[in-house]
Amino acid sequence: MAFSRKEQYGLVLLSFLIVFLLAFRFLLPLLAAPAQMEIISEEGFFNVVEATTEKKSEKKTFSKKRNFTYNFVTFDPNTVSVTELSQMGLSPYVIVNWIKYREAGGYFSKSEDIGRVYGLDSVVLGEIMVYVDIPDGKGTIKEGYSSDRYRKQYSKTPVKRRSTGVSDSEKDKVIIDLNKADATTLQKLKGIGPVFSQRIVDFRNLLGGFYSVEQLREVYGLSPDLIDKIRSHLVVSPNDVVKIEVNSLPLRTLKAHPYINFYQAKEIVEYRKNQGLLTDKRILEKFSSFDEMALNKVLPYLSFNEKRSKKEQKIED
Image (cartoon, rainbow, N blue to C red; front, side, top):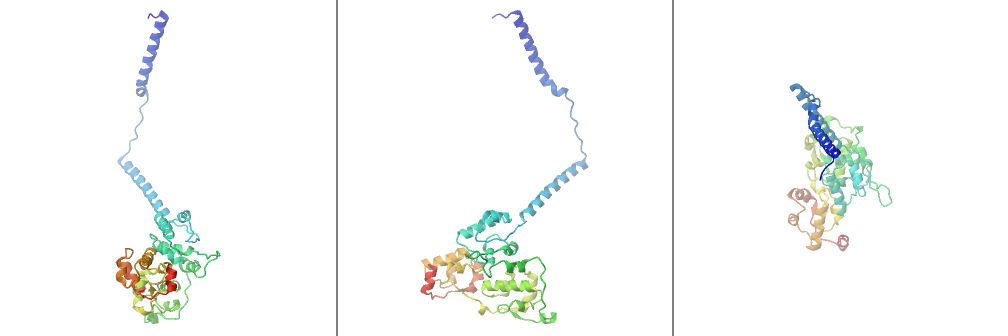
């Protein structure tokens, strides 16, 4: 096919434009002014590294502070939602255990029961109990289960101490029965004021009495040093310990004890239904929910009485 003269000129011009554009594309970087490289001295380099490290450290510090900032508000532990628990600042691990505890049939009848939630340490427990309000069926706060008394006990506002009328020299000689003393009597001990004395009495009532002075180490706020200083002034009467009838009490009553959780109480009740009465501690040693430490703690409170009334059996069933 032959091209006319005009078409030949056009093809030549088009070819020239294509070659020109390709050449311009490759030559453009060489024609641009080279960027000036910033020269950083050795000292400047380390300053930059140090500044970057400080920023990362600040981020980590802020993150830690944020994770441990709690925004507690008054709440009912039996109805509080996952969102509300999260807004208060509790960790996802604690929240999951909280909800699982309720779904498994667990019930918080008093503020101290929150301590049954796995993962909730003693410091957070002492702070969150201040905000617990458990209403009855009518929507009013149960007498004795309000957080009012905990607000008084755990408040950061200094508590004005009342004089017990006992001199320091007399405090050095005093001997107190831990299972018989009231809150006022306990204040005769050096370092024990109205707050600590009431906490000791409250914990004693939950347990059913002390069988060892060492159990004071489980009372919130009492330091090991303070306990070591007052232990020589304390005695316990194990005969005053209130026993738990493991062969008659229902699940809810069993798990209300500080040393028995829901799973342990459930295993006891299931054994009674399927195997019969628990005759001694050797049966509990076979339970998966009791390890050696947990069993040794609760044994002084257990009674293996074999007598069960029909009314007790009906309650359990």
